[in-house]
Image 1 (cartoon, rainbow, N blue to C red):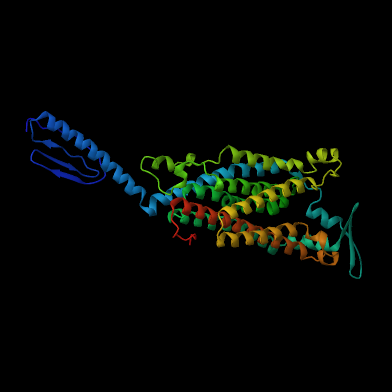
Image 2: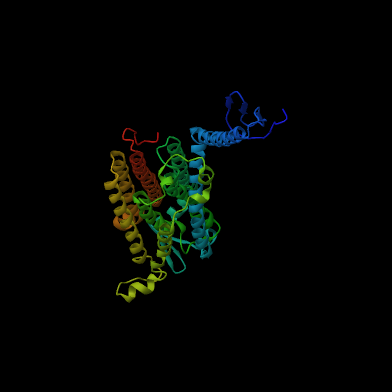
Length: 421
């Protein structure tokens, strides 16, 4: 045994070779000595080469096996993609909310002052409420009281949490889609944007509608009013991602090679790109068209009335432009990746969208006898939340179905269904 040569190898699988002159044993996670019973130098060199190749193949096979075990690695890649989408949405969202907070103003009239200064003058069912120079009708006072009641506060909180639940459920379904190889991790990342937007929006709406007014502050710029713009503009980039044929080949595959497994597990491997960032920045900045801001200068310059302190028509122009662009992109994507389920989701989205838009200014189109009822504003707000969550949910699935169709076509698998559950 004078010519014995020892070497340690860390490998992940079992390999055994026997011949007349040497014996090789490679055991996963163990360290073994290789004994070569030959004095021939050329044979020894060949044996070393064989060991190197065997070790490399063993490592590759083990890594591949670990990657292709569906319960862990594919799902973990999907979760990594979803988490990347989460912090990419959270950063601009929280910055927008912080901007709104910076513009808060102290309320002129608190609830206690209102109770002491209001005077009632009632004749039959016609009651007027006066406070200084302001004239309010009783229905406004009653509506405000009803809206501030504990029951209504609880209902508003629950209504806002619907957004969060909506987003979480859809994130779970996206993760399931990656696990079942119906979506790639990158597809889950792109589709997670609207899910995370809903998750974050719920708590922020509670702060906007309940917490801040209770502290005696008024919003100069309401967060939900501003946040509507990038949510519609996002659909343009959403569709562009679906139609983009120039993405890296790895993004169009549900499998991750052993060498790229570590890179795919990093959040930094998921990014929106310069085009998407530009669309979002322009959309967020379009709030400047509001007549209270830059719009108050631009629109009068071209002969369009834009009263100071009013959002119309400046905000309307920004909103309608982005809504039309989003719907136009959605229709084009549906033509390119049409399926019955995508079409059904699109129809439901349109129903929710129309309801959401109509309810915003519903009081301007109905009789005062109806709009002055104390329950009108409460019912209207509930309707807005239902319609908004309807369009959020079905916009997500509209694109998910089309991304599934794209993934199926990329694999050349015409027999797979396009449902996650």
